Image (cartoon, rainbow, N blue to C red):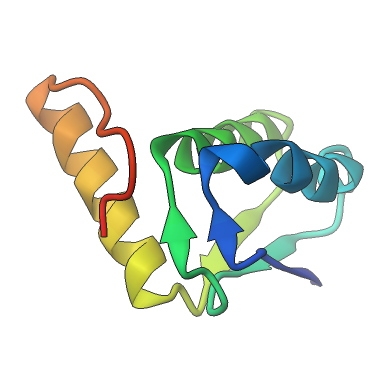
Length: 96
């Protein structure tokens, strides 16, 4: 299993950096572990990019898991999931 550490800032201003880090792993057949223990700031745009990346890998039969999610990352993911389940627009800005 390959491992990639997520950057500490997943704010909208850093989405391009996140995309650049993820892109080389999109077509990698090996399972991928995204370590989220260093994440200190999250915007909805960062979560949306992570979701799209995991979804696209899954649709190609590739395994991706997020491990060691920091409290900030876990809280942001829960907030986005809750909003989606309620049919509410995705939160913007810093959820934590």
